[in-house]
Image 1: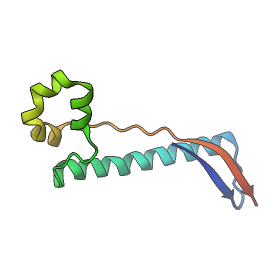
Image 2: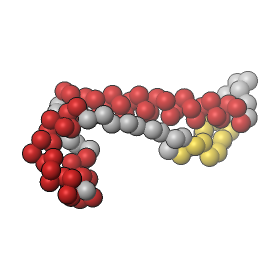
Image 3: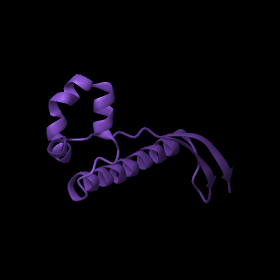
Image 4: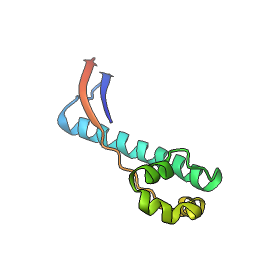
Length: 95
């Protein structure tokens, strides 16, 4: 993910350490939210709304044909790993 800090208020300065800490905090929060959403889709709604099965069918057709009939069970318990890399490009107003 890329973004900007629109403004900084108070004693905080936008040095490299501050920006790195902000990037890490944003990445961690987004990873938590995405993990929560995926878990809810898998366990509560039992739906492949993100299209993992479609991806398998399109890009790994031979493997897909072997698992297609069991896909619902596989998807529900399949581990999904999420990594967010955040980069703050610019810092706006400082006051």
